[in-house]
Image 1 (cartoon, helix red, strand yellow):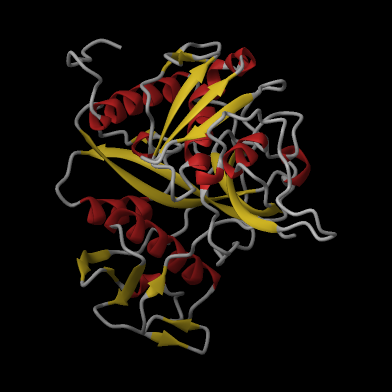
Image 2 (tube, rainbow, N blue to C red):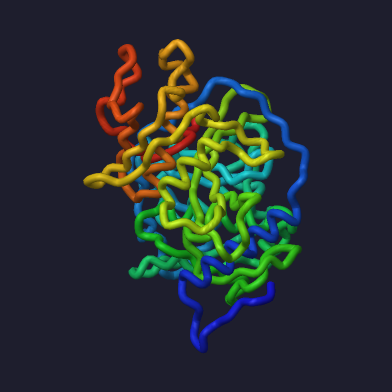
Length: 367
């Protein structure tokens, strides 16, 4: 890609993030256009889960991914919650939370579930896929400064060109779920990973969540002059039995009001040709969005509710998506949803008189 500049030293995290996001946009647009269809079913709800374990227990010696030892020798195997980022049938990166064995080296454990032929394939719903090629091995070393260095075997370069960007997102987002991992450096056979997969996608390590997830470019946006907003839509499983939340990083024209822009884009819904389902009624109008005392406040009109003024399933789903998007953009743990400036309550189960807490996890696997 032309037009990149680098300083004499390593580029700053901001520059790396912007450069990689632009590379992702090019990669995604290049391989867009696969057939995507979806129908609406009942919505799935985010749920609370136990805190994610620290990745700092990953051994400094770079233990192989094949040497995962349970931390208990008793009859009952200790379990903990992991959030894994995998690929759905439409190619989106999707978070799932599962209860898995607690082992020494939880960062390696998480990545081991992302390899074809590994334990991850057994726990995923039908139609979902792990992102890393079969035979891929690796070591993981997490520094006290929060950098996870992953050294892959050459098999990792077998990722197809159209899946490379999403595979990188899945790896980085899975590892940065751990509170002790802030960024990820990637290597292959001890050498820095500069081009990834069969399509040689440019990589600028270390990577962090500023790279985005399921990156897309709004039609009216110009690459290089954008603001990234993170939105939460839904999609449907391949067998049509459940829906699940999908985070999307949308690059919109540069703005000084990212929270407001994010809510407007959420209401706008998925871009044309997407397999994603809208999570907020398109008739909803945003009055204002701001942060007050550590709480993201979103004030919308009554179209949030059904035509009869009742709180239907779509209203409940809208509140979830608004809270997820608002807290993501504002960096808060709670969101207050208002209707025409009022904190309302409709019936016993639709209570917006108090802020909505952001869930710790999304899309929990049911076991």
